[in-house]
Image (cartoon, rainbow, N blue to C red; front, side, top):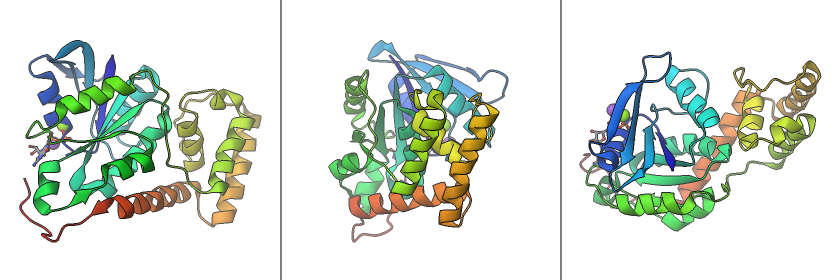
Length: 265
Ligand code: GDP
Ligand code: K
Ligand code: MG
């Protein structure tokens, strides 16, 4: 089984990767770029390969790290994604999560830094978060090596299952995505069809979809209509949709303790 670790910079990816692989790791570079590539075997089951992707905030095509991560996710297709998120910065970290869920690959969300979350007296409604995302959520501390067995058990459990995603936006946007599948059935047939449709709406120029000029024109018309309706450009629409959805998810599932800001790590 091939697992990719994806998450924001500083979310604890390397700490988790090292804890899971121990000395069973290989460090090189991603093809053609000087971004470090780390791959290793799960030390308790060497049939599982784990790839530590570069830290990213979004699956955009702008930074080198984003390009490398999304090429790997779209073209090499890991069988499971472990999305490590910083439990202390849930809102910011979930922005990437919403995009990973669009890829059609089973995702396990690992909420990291639980030692700090608990110290602050904060509480995450784990099962509420699972329901909101449509993906299993496992609370861990990569630093203290807490619940890493539980995380890997969950990764094995979702392996080979259909990817779920409960983060849907409003009907105008969802209808626009469906129109895009109708215009370009080749996009609709892809596992990552939702990813591609929403990125087309975002105005992403690096999707390599080989659409005909006519399809491009029809899709542009769908997007124009959406932009007129929301009085914003596609990128702005998608960003706001994602932030609004995440704000609701965090509001409903993260309770701040009375201890407020305490020690960091
Ligand atoms: P990366 O940028 O995602 O690879 O993050 P790192 O693994 O380098 O971790 C960033 C910092 O967070 C380091 O100082 C880690 O020791 C710390 N860290 C990682 N996981 C945890 C955790 O579960 N709890 C605490 N308190 N600190 C952590
Ligand atoms: K780091
Ligand atoms: Mg790292």
